[in-house]
Amino acid sequence: MTFIKNISTQDARFPLKDGAGSDAVHDINVYSYPVAILHSDSGHRGTGIALTLGGGNDLICKLIENLAAPLIGQDIETLMANFGSTLKSLADHPQYRWLGPHKGMVHLALASLTNACFDLWAKSRGLALWQLLLDLSPEQVVNLLDLSYLEDVLTKEDCLTLLKVAKKTRAQREGILKTGYPGYDTSIGWFNYSDDKVRDNIKKAVDAGFSAMKLKVGSKDPERDIRRAYMVREAAGDNATVMLDCNQQWTLPQALEICPRFSDMKPYWIEEPTHPDDVLGHQILANAITPMKIACGEHVPNRILFKNFIQAGGMYFVQADCTRLAGISEFITVSLLAKKYNLPVVPHVGDMGQIHQHLVLFNHIALDHEALLLEHIPHLRDYFVHSAMVEHGVYRTPQEIGSGSDLKL
Image 1 (cartoon, one colour):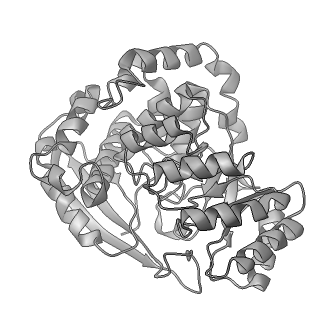
Image 2: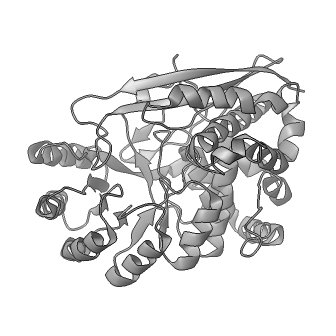
């Protein structure tokens, strides 16, 4: 048995330089984690992270400490055997729920805390997170989930069916553990990078084995975006996969006017093209710009809003992020929801790929999601004890126990 003795937090902030991490909205580049650390009687420490840009990081740490009280003294195996109920109870705190509900700083605190529970669970079993998840039965997976407010579209029985059907063919997909999961390079085209730097970064990315890459758009002058998008296409070549990311900058009328002008450079997707809460706006835009596809999810805070976006046809690529949702549990819930609607999950990696390299393997092998791409951002790799290994544009399967979240603090 492994009992949780106490919890501590760490306000971890990592300033970036020279335009790295910049986009059309966020230009103060301090990638930050409110870190939850569960201390156990066995000596294992469960580390959980969520993503912020610095401001409020300390407040989320305080929320983590307050929310964690019911976990103290619990055996990790007993806790995780019915974690979905625990997560619902934590999310429905009679006072903190008012601050959301199910969004904002409280939800980020839940993300960090939930991820710490999964990390401790994997470490206590001596397994990498992907191994732990793949060892679970369909019933055990479903017991990890809070499916409330999804009953109209995703029931417990639906989840069990999806998992059991995929299990019949999972052996056909296990080869990815040897070949690795394909990545795409976000770092070629940060918003404040000059044209010359973007071109140089494209060459470096191609030389490093990447065939997929992303450019930040959303300039006050749309002509800059259009010019740079076609510049990236020319530099990367016709066979490259190129994504465009607006980071919510456009209004719907602007998006309706600007997006069609990218059609000839054939973007793989247009990401966060307008306000992240505007479900119907995304629906209107998706219908207007087809066959171009919309990707979003980075700022979709919970499973219910993902349900709404999916029902409305407002997103195609589902960019769930376990450091922005309520952790790994809600990520799996959204992955099951996407699978039911036959939509691909391509995570936003607020953890810089550390945790999501495990989750995409689970999605592919256990849920039969297509192995498309996993975002790669290398800015924080030197701060992790076991950094994600990306070689020739491919994430190598991690072998260390846990979720890869331990930081050199």
